[in-house]
Amino acid sequence: MGPWGRMRVRSVGLLLAVTVVSAACAFATVKPTAVTAPPQKYRSLVIGEVAGEKVSAELKTKFVNALKEKLTAAQVFDTVVISGQGDAPAPSVTLTGTISEFDEGSGALRSLIGFGAGRAKVTGVFRLADETRELAQFSATRTYAGGLGIGGVGFLSMEALLDRLAATAVESVQQWATGAALE
Image 1 (tube, helix red, strand yellow):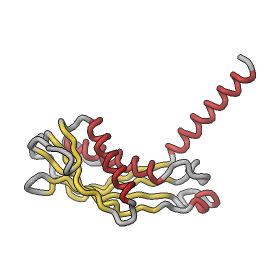
Image 2 (image 1 turned 180 degrees about the horizontal axis):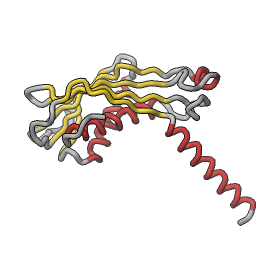
Image 3 (image 1 turned 90 degrees about the vertical axis):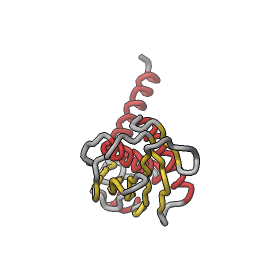
């Protein structure tokens, strides 16, 4: 292998290391506040309104689309639809939410101090309900502490952090739908 080949291998190795380190510095927390086991198998999930004053309409739309994509891929429900964009065969459950915290943090604090100072944070409160009652409520939080977890530049955008929040919410919905404890 010539010098260009070795340099290419080192570049790929460095890129993989940065990806692993940046992914390791994003953390998830789920807190169930009210959970009723599914009384039946639901065929469909409808994604209802997702509110949040601090989040732009564009990011909310991307978040809802990420929820739909991830819920569809999870294959827990036969049908996943966004409210107003299709019919959901009965029985169905509706997922709604509020992005209650949307804090970009401080890149300067992440760089200068690190160890969680200046971390970016998104929190959502989600509810699952059928036609007659609320079945579950939980909050999910994703935080990002910086490139190395002890400080450093940011490798993760708020859009990417919201996408990870969607993944965390979907994991919780999947746990609930299969009767597992929300974690």
